[in-house]
Amino acid sequence: MLLRPPSVASYEETLIELEVASSLSERVSPVSFEPLAPADLSNAPSKPKSPDFGLRLPDSDVTVEVTVWHWQVLRNWDAMTSELKTRLAAKLNRPGLWRHVSIEIPIKASSDGILDVIAKTVIQEMLASTTGDLELDTTAGETRIRWFEVPHFQGIDQVDFVQLPPGLDVAIAGGLTVESAFGCSTRPIVNDREIEDALSSLRKSIDRKSGQRHHSLPHILTLGLGHQRLHWDWVLPMFTQRIWPNSKYKWISAFCAFSPQRNWRLNAPRTRLTFEWNPNAAILVPDSLRAIAGAGASYHM
Image (cartoon, rainbow, N blue to C red; front, side):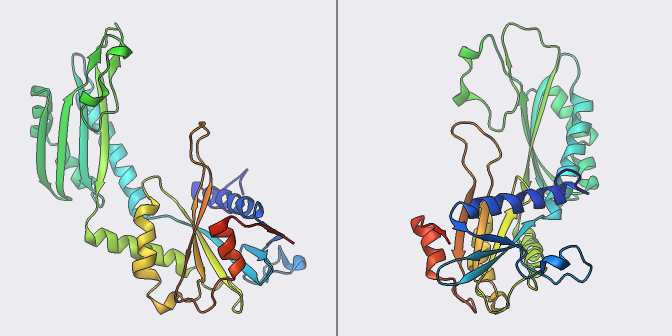
């Protein structure tokens, strides 16, 4: 699956499953794969449903299911803004022009919203003025567009980062003659309706996993985020405020937020598992798991 994945999403999900298993094995062993599926049925059509992993702890076995949340709205927004940047570049990346454009656009904007943004009058204003700030009532909703001239510094030591415009992702440094320059940054606008849409999408991802567990054992749902714009400081409150109070999700004993390491600079954050306990769970997690999460305990049986 990793070497020949059918899709990017499948690759991400398989990679995260293996990374979670690796992280857990540093603290717990043995870790079993698909513990409810007999070995002789591992490739059979009749293979029973099983959680991804099983953990053997001193006071209880625990099952673990790993999934990745893909919010399709964000993927659609990515495609839309990519097209938007291409169209803006075609209009603004011309000789003698150095423009950086910063756009805040509703997350459910469509191609119609793109046409509003690049309407002829807006482009003319960007061409005529080195700086500007417009708020447009587009078919997608309220959109804000700011632009300014890309700064040119004689040397990197002369760059005053404090004075750079917010959202700048391009600048010119050195004694070069640059014929033209274009940069564009985008940020989604999310309102209460979109937050409810995100919660609905998250619930569907969770619901698909409800049958892959042992009904008499504590069960951990481990979640990875399938988009770089999704962050745990936004997602975790959904569990405490909307998921745990719902008795429908009492089958989840604990939630584990998976944060992968995706760059290897010296100061880059390491792979991290963050546990959240469900106070309304039908089966509570054992004390040994709390010790692993809180005190860094290890159990290798």
